[in-house]
Structure formats: C-alpha cells, structure tokens
Length: 271
Image 1 (cartoon, rainbow, N blue to C red):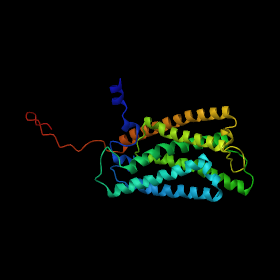
Image 2 (image 1 turned 180 degrees about the vertical axis):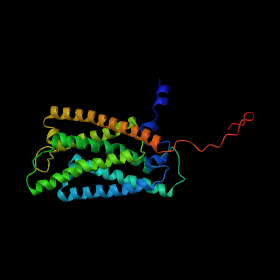
Image 3 (image 1 turned 30 degrees about the vertical axis):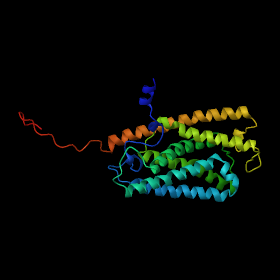
Image 4 (image 1 turned 90 degrees about the horizontal axis):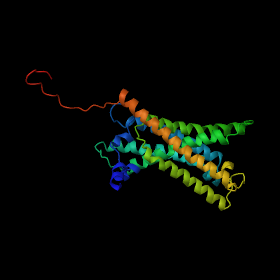
C-alpha cells in the first residue's frame, strides 16, 4: 500500500518545486513559442493597476486597522502575484537556456502565490458582494467609497482571472491545500485578535460582523461554509485552467516535434 501511494502522489506533486517546463510560468497560452515578452508586458501593466488600487486603499484608510481586513490581505496577495510574475518573466529574458523539471525558487514562489491569490481574491469578491455590501450610496464620500469597493472587490479579482486565462501556469488540484491554509490562517488570526480584545475601525469587538467570535456557533458555520467555498472556487479555477490548456493547445500552440524526415521505403519508394 505504501509503495502504491508513493507512486501515485509524490512530494514534488504536492509542493510547487517541479514541473515539466519552466516556460509554463512565463509564456502565454495564446502565443506560439515561448517568448517571455507578451506576459512580461501584461504583468507590468497589471502590477501598475494593482499598485494604484493598493495605494488608493491606503490613502483612504491610513490607519493600523487596514491590516486586519481580509480584503486588504487579498489586495496585497494579488499585487504580489504580478510582482512575482514580473520576476519570473524577467529572469526568463536572461536565462533562456535554463530548462529543467526542478523549478528555481522564484518560479516556485510565483506558483504558490498564484494558487493562493487567485482563489482568495475570487472568494473575497463573492463573500463581499453577497454578504457584506451595503447598497446605500448617498453622498460624495459614499460614492468614492463605492468605487474603491469596486476596485478592491472587483477589479483586482478580474486582473487575477486574466492572469489565469492568459498564462500557461499549471493548476494542480492537489494544491488546493494552499489557499485553504491561507484561509485557515486568517481564521486563526481573527480568533486571536478577538481574544486579545481587538476591534474594528469603528470600535466593534470583531473584524467582520459575520465572523463575530462572541457568537462562536455562527462564526464556526461561516468558517466551515467558507472552507467549502474555497474548495469549490479552486475546483472552478482548476477546470478553467484545464479548458484553457486544451483550447490553446488545439488552436494556438505547436504540439508536434521537429523530427527528421523518414527515409523512403526501399520497395515502394513512398515516404
């Protein structure tokens, strides 16, 4: 049984240390060849947008409480995703001969951030618009806050999804534990924060009302439902990546190998 298990699931498959092609992390699904420039340009543009939203969010709420919200964790993760992507694409420009199944540290870092940030950002968007959003927009301040909400809970997720669709970054279902671990880490943080007497920016004894640990039963239900939601979201991302690879391989990417021409048959002279 042990031998069968080791053959079916290896440590390298569970972690982000190996892959068939390094180019999967810097080439686009919608290009021929493995030139890193298209994804590098896209990642530079998206990094600029993500950084602009991050700075805007910090300017609007310049308090230490900024760090306690999951939305802002997600914003930092998405920004880190594109910065790691720039690093991978830039290194590919100067290390064109590097090709091995064992990934360099920067590619492994990008892959882990990719798995976590896209899943978490989509989950944050769903939770916010379904459970937290208040539809009241009355004065100019509220309107500005509304557009910041759209940026932090919508545009950043769209940027992450475009990275998923445009890149060749592989998505392995075994990696679902990575976004789950980040989600659980935030749950632990919120629990410790509550026990320590922490409050939100308005002085309430919780970070989010739906995650009020003074009502532990309801909070537990929300956490359990969110973990299930993360698995569903990751399965959705895995399915999208699978379809992306099949469609792009069929329509765009070259899959044949440059093999030498076969010699003609001695008897029929047919090649």
